[in-house]
Amino acid sequence: MSDQNRPLTQTVDGQAVATVADDHSVPTTVSMSIKDLVASYTTISNYLNSRWPLPDGNQRTFARTMKIMEELGELSDEILTSMNLSRDSKIAKFSRENIEDEFADVMACILLLGIELKIDVEAVMRRKIQFTHERYDMDKSQKN
Image 1 (cartoon, helix red, strand yellow):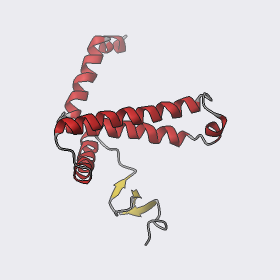
Image 2 (cartoon, rainbow, N blue to C red; image 1 turned 30 degrees about the horizontal axis):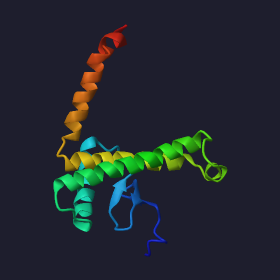
Image 3 (tube, rainbow, N blue to C red; image 1 turned 180 degrees about the vertical axis):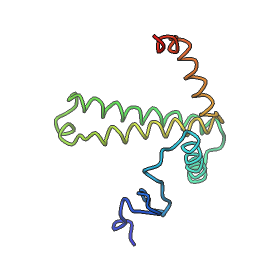
């Protein structure tokens, strides 16, 4: 089946799945943990590093950081468009899916940078959530 004719979703073992061109399927009905996301993006990172090799980790870190800035700019542009603060031709083509896609791009780039920096994303996020709860005394305020 050609990629043009391939369905965007299909059923596998009773589960709806989104299908990508290389026949790897990602369940759409199962929530993804941070661990799952990092595992998926580690595979993507390895591919990107082999497809566009850079001489060292510093250059890869710089490239990942610049890519975050690019995608953040695109997300910002879509948010401005959603607020009718763009040219009319762009506003006419706006859809919420554009914001969602750009948001996902930003998250993906942040995960790729975390992988490059060998950050334990799950542990860091747990630590940050705990810090936020303590900083704003959230546990106490939720009891009242």
